Length: 164
Image (cartoon, rainbow, N blue to C red; front, top):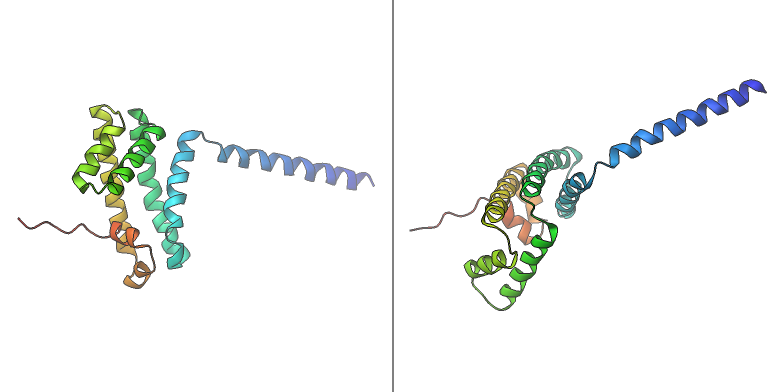
């Protein structure tokens, strides 16, 4: 009887001790949350393609690495989620109003009320994300790409060079 109580006590202690580090690993602050949210949101777009686990892991690794850099750079210049939301809302409204892409971009950047440094970092980080998306596109077959939403398909391709 004494051995059973002792073993039960040991199991209980081991169970509590193993749960504590797992909870700590998840809570790494808002910066980690932004990276995870960006990666999770990006990966959800690939669900229609039914990718194998290896490809999904490669995509997650590539995008997560870039997401960490993007979040760090944006945090460094104090680019807030609200500023990004204002930009998105302004761009959406401008597109609905029939503005040209160049005008939409200008309107969106002005709506952020950002400093020149913040705008520069935003454009740099968008470029980083675009390059990562193109790299990810190279990992997928044409059949897999065809199952994805059109917008994502376009983002995974090299931009067409303009003729002069």
